[in-house]
Image (cartoon, rainbow, N blue to C red; front, side, top):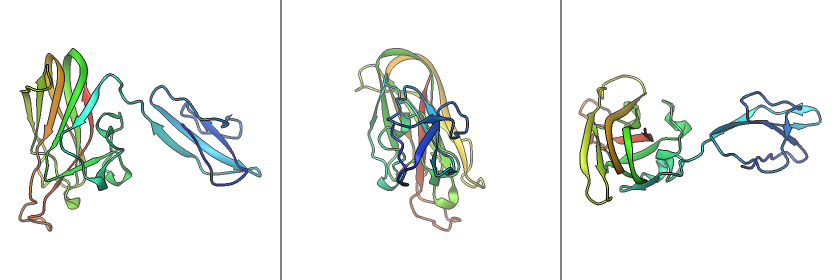
Length: 216
């Protein structure tokens, strides 16, 4: 991981232990190797003047699973890219900050390949609802399993527990307890569809926003 500063001649100091960096912290001289999820905090110092603390959390993407998206996310709501749903980063109710991946009209349809048949306790997916921004929880999320990646069997259906009229932005995790062995897990989040009559955008297609598929 690289750290850069636009101020010529400034020195960068950083920490990776959660502490606030100072001029006595580690001096940045070369890219940092990160092998696990880590929060990096850094400051720039020039002429004894220090910048505000800048920080970022970097997650190690699981290398034991592979994600295939059967339906593509919207380019304007790409989250952190193709691996958003398995990058370990969870979005907040402030969806403009990032980490959320958006889908409209098409359902979210993703397949996880775990490489080999493994015991699975549960699987879940995080979602967001902010009705004023046309973002609505899925009507339900369906979880399928397969040993060959071709023939999928429905293992669980989890309906939303929160009504579309619920005020304020909020998150919801759709979780299914599977307790079985499988290699492939398919996650299908079903669109709510057109916004209802009482909504200012009535008739327009709502969005699904998702952030992370978690397998235990």
